[in-house]
Image 1 (cartoon, helix red, strand yellow):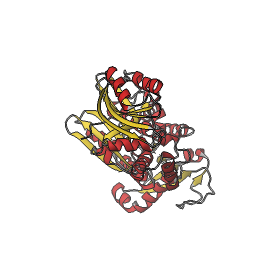
Image 2 (spheres, rainbow, N blue to C red):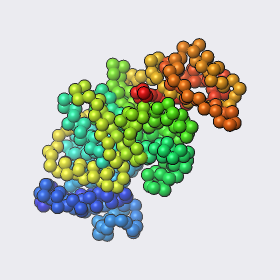
Image 3 (cartoon, one colour):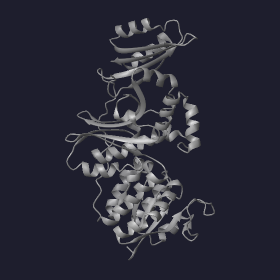
Image 4 (cartoon, rainbow, N blue to C red):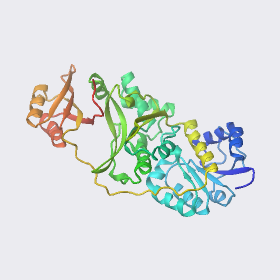
Length: 421
């Protein structure tokens, strides 16, 4: 590397890219004293070089042509432009040139990470991605250290701040999903097109990266059980609360004798559960180790400075560490546990106004079907609409279908994580 200065290229100069520059500038003295070199942004790839930005860079640094970055004498490139195309081609070209890469791009890693890790090993360059999962929470660094002594049987967490903000507001202010989504967009938590967040894709990409790091393999993305929050209603959230539960979008990865199972879905947690205490746009990751037991890490999972902090920490780390091969990523054909276990509990929410949909008739049907009902909460609106929440064991897909077809009910079932008092 150049004597006295580390030359850094930047792909993307949006919110996170601006935060990276602000962080480097504000911490330049500390970074220089620890690294023995100054960090200098020498090239920044942008879509529009004429655009007004919150951070100032000399016009000679800005370029709209990736070839300018590739041909420059950068030592490290920070990729914060997002997406897969053309980002993958850019990152691949930089690695093949022998350039270290720091990325915050969880979608790129989840979709093309196996190839990029192999490529980085071939060219003996660092591929650092702490900022791709849970923003400012240094969970990947913790896992690399933690895995030296502990076997991790499970990971679970709230990995998307936007959906957590929406669910918090729906519960505390008793608002509809659409009302809170509008608030989230106005505050900058949600994009104009919020599908990646609210349909669970963002959390799924992060879970994929965690599973690769912990287990050395992961199911293909298409095999992950993924459900979002866009169809949740205030009635479901209210009746869950009356039963002693709170709905969170929980990402989980577990390894057992049957194989690896990954899921991202709205899940019922007892209100006393540690993850149920995570509110607004905060993230949290809970690990289960065979020696240390359960650990919980929480913090801001997104935003300009939390994500930028993780990027710059990666940058500083790789400048002080010699290259060591990255553990290989691979996609596994390990058998999934796809069928709900007979012993698994769930909260079943029922809503409808058909004459057959009385609590007594529903309970009678479930008893005959061998479904155990542990707890029941019933509400009736003035229009004669039945809303009921049932904590059940042994409820299967065929039972749900019969509740719809024979009783005229809307049915939504949620897995339970723990039992309410």
